[in-house]
Amino acid sequence: MRMRMGKWPMLLALVMVTSLLGACGNGKAESAATASGGGKLKKIVIAEPLHSTGYLPLYVAQREGFFEKRGLDVEVIQAAGGAHVAAVVSGDAWGVIGGTESNALANNNNSDPIISVVNVVNRANVYLMAKKGTAPASQSPEDLKAFLQGKKINAGRHGGTPNLLTRYLLIQLGLDPEKDVQLLEPADGSTVVTMVQQGAADIANGAEPQISDGIAKEVWEEPFYKFHDLGDFSYSVISVKKSTIEKDPATVQSFTDAIVEALEVVQSDKELAMNHLKAEFPTLADEALQAAIDRAYTDALWSLDGLISEDALKHDMDVMIQTGIFKGEYTYESLVDMQFVNNAKK
Image 1 (cartoon, rainbow, N blue to C red):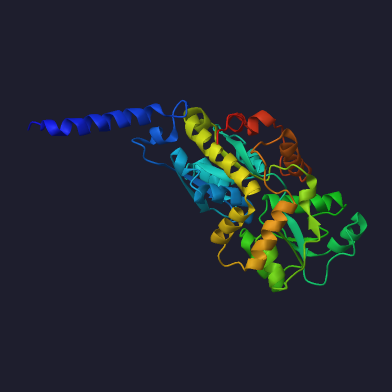
Image 2 (image 1 turned 120 degrees about the vertical axis):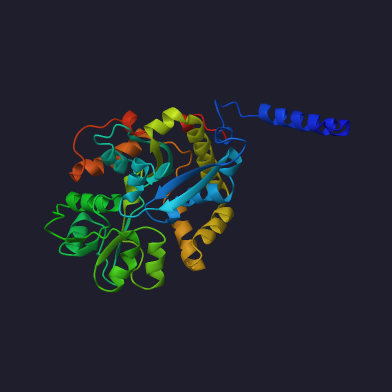
């Protein structure tokens, strides 16, 4: 069937618009949208160990459309008990948010290692809370050691960063984690409030929103010990397989660009950050949400620019090594790749 002449101008205009859109790319080797075909969003999955207020920049990038405008449809799934890293190894997730130390363990004898590409939480986001009315007399090593001796401590799953940090502190104080205290190691990090509330534990380690939840329920007061004092710490970074970096750098770059933009927005627009925090944690009271976000800013929780410094990795890995969980050698280059942060475009 022949096309009527009246339709040719419309068809020509459509071709011209399509050509112009194709010419307006950002100059990268291949945009994520183009890679997915026809401008369709490319679906990727990020595994998280638990739903945490510390991951707010990731949620902001989702909710503000920072991923979408770069051609990505990002889904975040929870995979507790260390399964967040395993999900990337198995291919069930494109990337993972977690510590570089978990990647170091998973990379042992792994022909396709997991590499960290952008920072999110640049402090050891772990706090110790004691049952209400039982906190130590002071933060001195002597008082801390005396207080912790013989206590039942909910340390989180064995091998997880909160667990390792608890063991690290005990060792620094001259206590044996296996003999001088009773470490409780549930895989589900959301149990910390309940275990102390029911008397199963004397002390809990955790972060927001558990801290504010426990305070609101009068289970404990403010944390008596903060691990963020360790300084730069690659606590929660985004990591992907080495093969992903090699085969699909455009998607890694687009994802990184979105996270870097979100990090800047979270720092510059606290009202927006709070609105998204409420949306992600709708069951938390306003007072708990405010306490959580105030704590994050006060403790300089979030990375300012997405960079993972050598000090941040070293502090993380030192905890692993001194607790005896990690044995062997590692290098910054084998665990971290900052090319995408260095080339980030907002």
